[in-house]
Image: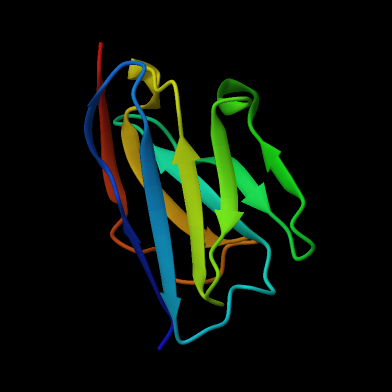
Length: 114
């Protein structure tokens, strides 16, 4: 059974940092294109960062220069380092394949206080 588990969220003041982790089971994600998504209340889920098989990364404009997606040393972990957090980054964050085919995990809540 394929499962994605996100962690690392929390409450942080504006300007602070968090590091999110995504651990996969039942599938190998080290050779897959993966992404971090987020969904704020009342909004659609949006893709904020991607990492491809060769390590190439891409970001939505609103997080460029502040967020960094990376792979862990193990085969099944992806991280999202978030710096200079803003109130508008408040959302539930999810990881998944691109294109998405794995069931969504429970996500991890990030709350940034202004």
